[in-house]
Amino acid sequence: MDDPPEATFDFSYLTANGYLARDAGGRYTVGGRGFTRRWNGAAQVPYLYMEAGGLFVTYDDEAAIAAKVRYVASRGLLGAMFWELAADREGVLARELGKLPH
Image (cartoon, rainbow, N blue to C red):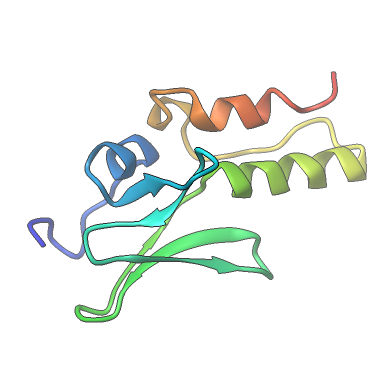
């Protein structure tokens, strides 16, 4: 692996550089570059893990954003906070945000 373990990657970097790949349904649920994508059910978020190096990468994907949208809608909240929309250069995550009721 070329990147140092303390590196910070945004969603677009993960998808563009093969850390995440699309599944048969077109969603980014497949780990790459030696990483396995896993899901934390309690937090409703994915993470990538490489057992050989003990490397751990956290991020939001479509499923995590969809879970957040469902939570906001079910609680009647007026909004939610997330890290950085600019990290979603292809608009993959923004499409899930667009499902919030207006």
